[in-house]
Each structure stands twice: as C-alpha cells, then as structure tokens.
Length: 150
Image 1 (cartoon, rainbow, N blue to C red):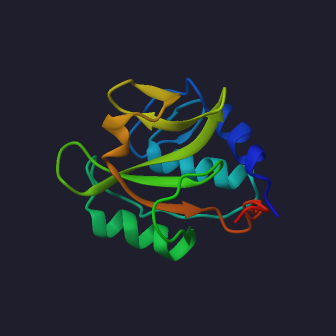
Image 2: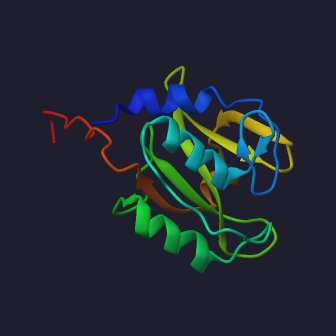
C-alpha cells in the first residue's frame, strides 16, 4: 500500500520545478499532468498520458485518462494524497490536476501552475474550491482511517 503522507512528501520534492507544457522532469520542467505521472512513477506506478495534448486539453481527455488509471472517489471529498481535477481557465472544462496536501491543519494543493511558472503548494480557497470537478486516489493508496464516531 502507498502511504498518504508519502505521496505528499514525494510531491513536495517537485516544488519549484519550473512549469513546462507536457514536461515530465524535475530538472527540465513539468506540467500538472506530468506532476501526477512523475509522483506516481516515484511511488512505483506506471501511469501514462497521451503523447500530445493541447495546453488546454478537453475534459474528455483528462477525465478519460484519470478514470482509466486512478481510483475515482464518490463525491468530491478531498483528503491527504488524493488527486483533484479542476476546471481550467481557458474553457469551462476539466483541465487541471493537483495533489492534496496538508499544512498546519489546513488542506493544501500541490500543482504545476502555468501562471506561477512552477510547481507550488498553497491552501485551497474559494477560488480553487469552486473549480473542483472530481477527486481520485492513486491505485494502492492506504484507505482513510474510519472514525469510531461514524
């Protein structure tokens, strides 16, 4: 099983890697898809993406690849180590991905953001929450602990 904190710790090693469309490397640059694939590779997973996709890919493409390779979560419950898919900025389609982290008791998002020019981590706020489309787990992620209070 893949530990949730290990997913986040691995994603954090990518922070400050520069943004590069279709990039797959900490050294040469990475986009949001490449971050999910790169973190997955470091966790021992072999995830794939299309050979080519536009800077603003269609929702069908992003969601189809996620549905095929990640474990969908009913609803949109964010939790440590999960992968979030968000509405893009150019079109009203699911086009952006992030890994859910946590810092000082608050949920964060780790993502490669073209507008920032790099991978960064920051808190979820209303701006990002209203863009949340779907939530997934990497295959083999440890289950969430169940509260004894239901």
